[in-house]
Amino acid sequence: MYFCIDLIAMIKQVLHKAFSVLLALLVLVSTVSFTIVEHYCGNTLVDAAIFQKAKTCGMDMDATANCLTVKKDCCKDEVVVVKGQKELKFSSFEDFDFQQQLFITFLANTYIHLFEGIEKETYPHKYYSPPHLVADIHVLDQVFLI
Image (cartoon, rainbow, N blue to C red; front, side, top):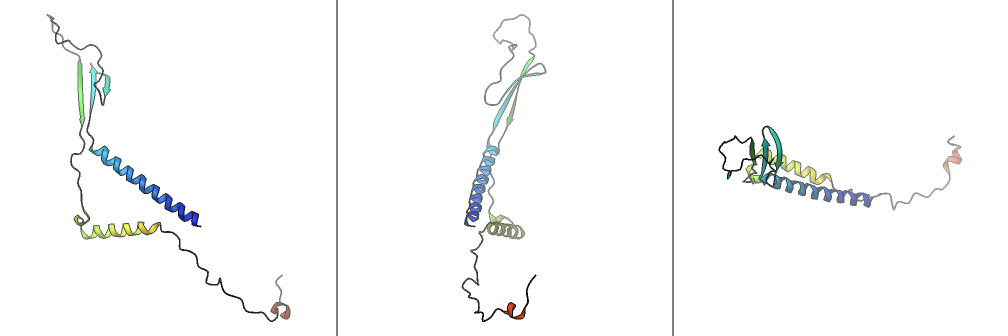
């Protein structure tokens, strides 16, 4: 019986740590900004990169070349910036109205008492001694279960 209570307490601790790590990662991911660089040759995507420069297809026009004819460059680079959240909003318990405070209080109280251990069982008849039998009544009255 004590093994079951210890197991429940251990599962509760593991779940608490897992949810803490999950929430920390959620905050981290929501505040990180990154850039996606895509290189197109015509209408075809050649390469996309997140943390480095995208590879080219080799058809880029050289800016230092002295050419008499000017060709239109068919390659283009697109940069997509995914911005993270700059400010985190911290709200306190007093910012909620009374109904929300009441709901949160009851919800927290319910879940705190949900995983309480089972109380130690008590046996009120443990030290009870049965009365002393003077005679066997079933034999005297000739009453038997068949």
